[in-house]
Image (cartoon, rainbow, N blue to C red; front, top):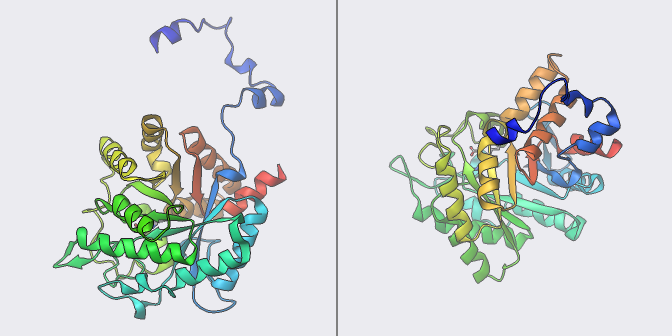
Length: 337
Ligand code: PBG
């Protein structure tokens, strides 16, 4: 770096503003671009027909019944968004300590995936979370016994959950549970059932974050959550540990990686991209969305500009794509040029 600086020369010989003076020149020296291909849209599903409910802590985001999810998927496709991620808001009556609704081939998420695939075929990728929290009466991603989150017993359920989702037509399973060994176990389970083509997007570096709060409202897992997720999700203080998590997931067969949350973890994203050269995604999570919406709603910043800047920041930090609740809005702005 010091040699590089020495070669730079000095003012007034050097003027950084020369390249920035004209719009065409700024475009010419621009290092990163954001396109609709970089966007993945997370959607919340509820039961019923023609139902939409707004999520209070995520202004502008709604839970949709399956018929409306199918419509939203069509909108995504028309906008050029390559994939959507679907999350069920499960009826509390169906939540149990063994999370068995997650293995039900007719659960909300499976019915939604089948309907989306029937309507849109192979033109749109569908991603499903693999974790027990939508179905677990304890709100945890794994089985709970005596206040402890069981690892190996949870793996068996995650495998069955992934297979059930693959059978429904899911293209990408995204384990977000942070149990040890899940990627290998899920890959084996999928292959054994003939789903060699189903991709695994591993939430490899997922932190125990307070930025997930609004999501837990959206899917109704927040109220029931007992304790926190610190025994399986990562400590926000750690960075080297993320590389170990990723190395394991890559060796176990992950096709793609995810860093989560997004904006406060751009350093992690950059390290992972540089170290592994894998397809790497960032999740601009619910709390990040809520922050921008809240400030914009109060007139404290220009919401659209701040949002587009945040998405570009992910690209600059090395992301191949971003899961964002802003996906349709961003795609619309990009398509308008
Ligand atoms: C559940 C899951 C969470 C999110 C995605 N999958 C929440 C959690 O781990 O508690 C958060 C997404 C968001 O905040 O937007 N396994």
